[in-house]
Length: 444
Image (cartoon, rainbow, N blue to C red; front, side, top):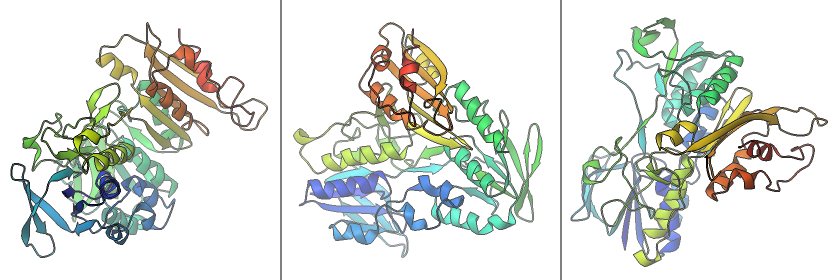
């Protein structure tokens, strides 16, 4: 069996590694534009912020390691055309410019996503950066000593993480968000406001309801950012306003979401037989929402593993993905936050009959040092009390509690059950009534 995987970063290499173990007789080829594979871009903000120094820490596997398992790697190669009827891929060697054809029996698309770079005047300057590729971040790291005032455009995960890291390096950071709130995708308003306050507590200037309209250049460098409200002097700009699935050259052949992400089923198969997809180029089956676009490394790796299992086996032996909950976490200044399942606004948009509870309670017993408040919000069915979603905000010991809440949502537990779950207790870690118990018991 000829298996071809286009894309060798997260989902693609997870699939290749699993497929090589599942079907040892398959001939597996991975086509990747970069010089490397298995790169964890989630580490880039922390590499930029000098949380660690060795860039190799962000690579889960080396090409040599994968080739030893029998996987054929075509690095610095690009799939430029796919004939889905004849099952033939046109591949171009990016070093020589030469092209050749590669046939497949089964194909996986793992082409990822690309950062959205809006057509704002002046954005093409050398001191405008995106935080998705190692080369770009290394270029920024080398120039950082000459930058003092840095504007981060975009209040999502990457924007918040980068702003958080840059201020630790002594930079004067402004975070610009066109919408009314930062982190508005995974969090409801009260948590977005808490995260904004956490950044401001660390002297990051957070400007919401304000969009960049022009990047003013002087001698080819951005020196100011104009908005409808004024002008900001800057030494550099970081663009972090989101991602677009990298599916443009083949998306017309498939059923897709509105943003171009390829829709897959619970087996990872697309609307074309023998063609699979996973990662940031594809949808992800969500346990509560159905087909969604969730550009998270956890989803990419899990769905990649499912595809790797199925792509080399007969259909009767395929495994199904259990479904995502879109669980995520973020650190902002001295605080941390997590979200899992449905937010209140998602539940309302889905037409669910819900109630919510939002409380502050202690992280552990009052007689143990450094007691902190944890804010917990639960979204649950108004009649059955089945838990649909949860959000948390606080300092130490906050985000890991999301693990218990994710498990409860996955299992379809009610708040009444959750209120009496026997969580582990000792004064340094919890109170006799664990914070999750307390929140669940306020659901009425």
